Length: 457
Image 1 (tube, helix red, strand yellow):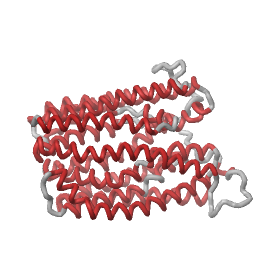
Image 2 (image 1 turned 45 degrees about the vertical axis):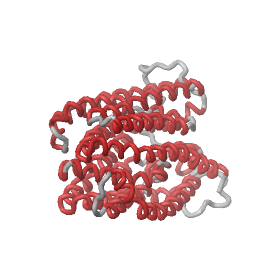
Image 3 (image 1 turned 180 degrees about the vertical axis):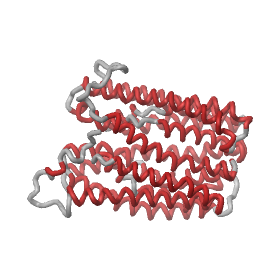
Image 4 (image 1 turned 30 degrees about the vertical axis):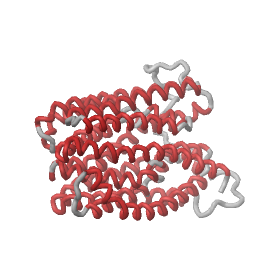
């Protein structure tokens, strides 16, 4: 393995470690604040809280322009080579995308509550609180600061931003538990979490840029020049639409379960999914750390290096998945019972099905950023479209037939389809640009792949 590959893997695991530390703290705190919220509200009202906040998260994901990806894709070269004016124009574009998508998210969320709120399982009496919560979407759709942290290899700042929100939610839930607060209070706590994360992320992002000199002569309204980032709108919309379709898979399943089975079952489904995803989260957090490393290898046209890094990541994920299954069998049902304060019949099977979906999703962790970086985001979109068209009718039919177990099994089928669709173009690409092992005499990267595998828009 070359020095570049070792350095890439070292940075990937080091940066993933920071993200894992933050999310591990989040997972531990979530076991606490969810339990407090359930005891304060009761399972029925807690289900309403989950439905309203899940709807807000789904709308945010559906309207969010993933500005951190174009910031990395088009901003890495000018930032690294000192072209500060060009980088500032790319940064201004990404920030405008965030603020515009935040406004669109609030509008869509408000209209959604007005038109479909009661159909998603919460009572009409809670409509006012749901309307107020949609204001939070103004602050959810911000990711330029995360792009700055990743560009500067300061992933620990992402962890710090997450921790500020976690502490607000945990402390707020504890106060609500002690004082027996109601649904409106807990929605306010969930909103305050997002606002605090927005403030801390924005502040740390500006401080990091000021330290690195990246915000020289910055203006939010500075327009891009044609040569700055050709195809940036197409790239931004493609990556964002891919994220939208992923949110359909992750969020709308809960909303469908709530509409079919009611808030209590939706709460069980949401918490069991949270446990399954929480157990698998350490490996999933590797994805943000992969983008900058794949971009660095791509700029060097080191296709064999990308191939070896991808293979090693797959081997590690496979071994990690075996450990996850054992953990889920040992403690999954215990966590579900403790968090919901009720014993749910068949909880172990439900947790295992949810974890199965999360483990299959781990296989996509190195594939999605690889396909994006090598200019084949359309293949990821193809997989998302197929999964969405399959998953929504499948989860509806299987939930009607087998209730929560059917909904969880539908997620497994969808995750398997996504993995297979993403594997095919990756195999084909490696056969073309990095067949077999790297030749001993090959001292320079494969020239035939130059230009063909960069995203041009």
